[in-house]
Length: 419
Image 1 (cartoon, helix red, strand yellow):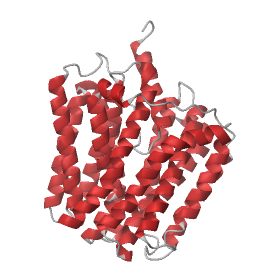
Image 2: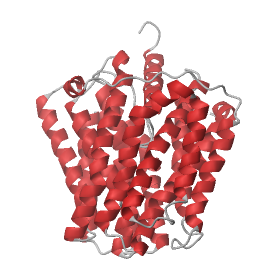
Image 3: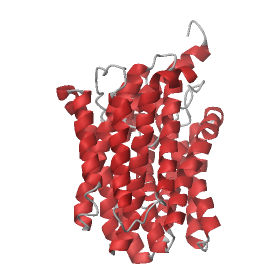
Image 4: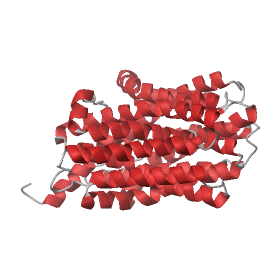
C-alpha cells in the first residue's frame, strides 16, 4: 500500500482536491437555491443537470481524449469547471444553473476518465487492487472534507463559490506535473442492452433503480435540508455522514456477499433501506435522528453499487466484464437523471418528507425485484465467488473495468496454479 501511495500520491492528491471541489458545489447549490427562493421542483432540474451532463460525457469524453490527448482534454475541462463554478452567483436563475450544472457534469466525467486512466496505467497487475482501494478512500475523504468547508463562509455570498473553483484549479497541478506518462486510451463499447439484461435482469433493473436512489440521496440532500429548515451545518454534516456510512460498510458487506450470496444481501439491503427511509419520513427531525439516518442510508446505498456490478459479472465471461460495466454505468446514469426531478415534484406536492418516501419506494422495488428473481433463477452465482470489487459511485467505466481486472486477478491467485 505504501509503495502504491509513493508512486501515485500526486494523482491521488489531485483526485481528492477534485472531490472536495465537486462536493462543495453540490451541497452549496441546494442551500443557495433556498436562499434565492427557488422551489424544490426548480432545484430538482438543476440537480438533474449534473447527471445528464455526466451521462453525455461518458459517451463523448473518450472520443475527445483519443483525438487530442489526455493533457489537452484534462486542461480544457479543468479550466471550464473553474469558470463555471464562479458563474453560479452571477446568474441566479434556475434555468441557467441547470445548464451550468450539466456543463459541470460533462466536465467532471471527462476529468474522472482522464485521471482514472492515468492511475490505472501507473499501477501493475500486482498493485492495481491496492491502487483502486486508495482511490476510493481518497474520494470519500474528499467528499467528507468538502462538507466541512461548507461552514467557513456565508452561502449567501461569493466566497463558497470561489473556494471550489480554487480547489479544482489546484487539483490539476499535481496531476499535470506528475512524472507518470499519459497512458494510451482505449474505451470499451458496452454490451447490447438485450445481452446485458439476458445475463443479469437484476443487475440491469437494480442499477436503474439505484441511479434514482443515488441521485435523490446525494443530489437532493441539500434541497431537502433547506426545505426542512435545517441549518447549513446540519445539512453539511448530514451529507458528510452519508459518505462516512458508505466508507464504513463497503468492505463488511462485500465480505458477507461473497459468503452468503449476493442476491440475499441485495434483498436484505433493499429491505433495510426501505425501512430506514420510510421511518425517516415519520420521525421528527432532531439533529441526532438526521445524522443517524445519514449514516444508515449511506451505509446501505453505497455498497449496492459494487454488489450489483459484482453480481452481474458473476454470470459473464471475463472477456465481457469490461463491456458490461460500461453498460451498467450507462443504465445507472439513466436512472439518475430522473431521480432528482421526481423527488422535487413529490416534495412540492407532498412536502419535504417525500425525499425519504421516494427513496423508500425505490429501495422496496429493488428488494421486491430481487426476491422475484430468486424464484426465477436458482443459481446465485459461481461456485467460488471471485470477490467484490469495491468502487465509488462516482467512478467512471475506466476505474470500474480496472477494479474488475483486479478482482479476477485476486480470484486466479486464490484458486492456485493450474486454474
